[in-house]
Image 1: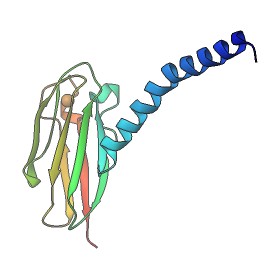
Image 2 (image 1 turned 180 degrees about the vertical axis):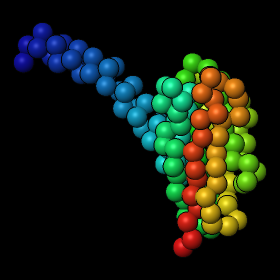
Image 3 (image 1 turned 180 degrees about the horizontal axis):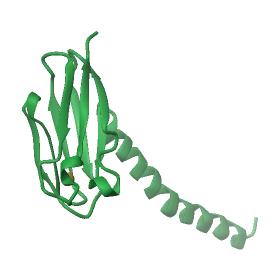
Length: 132
Ligand SMILES: [Cu+2]
């Protein structure tokens, strides 16, 4: 093989490593961060999509680990008062991780605790803890 071909192959391998490598690394990092999550809830003002999902089911007797990710341009909150869970303020682009173990089955309201839009009061959902 000529030196030119070898240099071309090495260049191509380096270009691939530099472009695909970071993407693979980012995906691997993201999957390692979400592996033990029970659910991720995206937060947007109601007129932009509301919480998503708005209905989350978890099994009674198991630890719950929720990540609430604010993908909006304004601050939101997240609380499940009946379970004494409150993330406080979650600023735009930030997320909160909440860990708790519900002590009895039932349906628990969660809602935004920060005034975020004129439809703020509609920013809510339900966490259902199912009996085994
Ligand atoms: Cu909100």
